[in-house]
Image 1 (cartoon, rainbow, N blue to C red):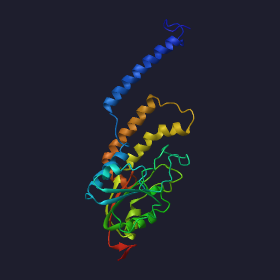
Image 2 (cartoon, one colour):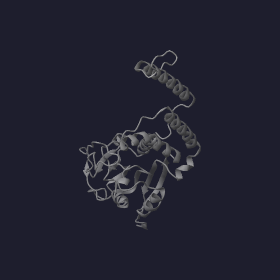
Image 3 (cartoon, rainbow, N blue to C red):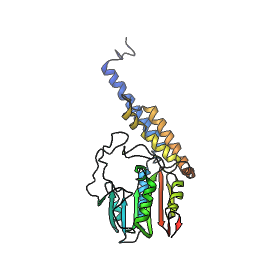
Image 4 (tube, rainbow, N blue to C red):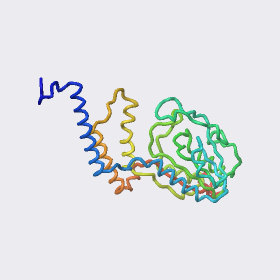
Length: 280
């Protein structure tokens, strides 16, 4: 059958021409779409926000003070402590592969740790540190309240405690993963009970940021768990971008939605004159 003098329309040569035309049209559509709806950052700022906050917070600690990085892992935040007397601690049992479930790092280097111990029983004298930071660690602790007790013991009076936690998270570093996340009410209650005065408790992102983050993960998760997933087509990509554009706008207007859900919480507390909720 001959359509418009093309000969066999399904021939390899004609199909190649059709594909080239389709590719060109696709590129033009995407170009026009991106000029009208440029790519948004919504859902991509979790780590960036947290690290910017952490660096700023650590710089407020006076030069030369002694800080413990509790659950330090690969010491990725030592770079923010160049003005401090930095000591690292971790239990040192995660090697990168875990039990192969969920998200794993693949490899992990514990060789540079100063202290290898349980975080609830750190072999140092009481009141040994001016500051303690514990970054994205609490979801990996079987007994996080006991960790707060230990931080209260090793901090001097007036010492600063810096913590970040997810409000909700995917399973990672399994089997050393025990909590999906934490709410502000955990810290408002248990920091006080362990003798801390809450100085700052701020959310990282909001509901719309979090939803956008998970939308951006859909393809990678699908490829990981579903065999033979086709690549997203033009309609899929345009639909996803339209949803992200909407979430970007909602994120700007709906910051208070962080009370419902966010990437995580950023906490600063000061060791006061109380122990387990009682006056000294």
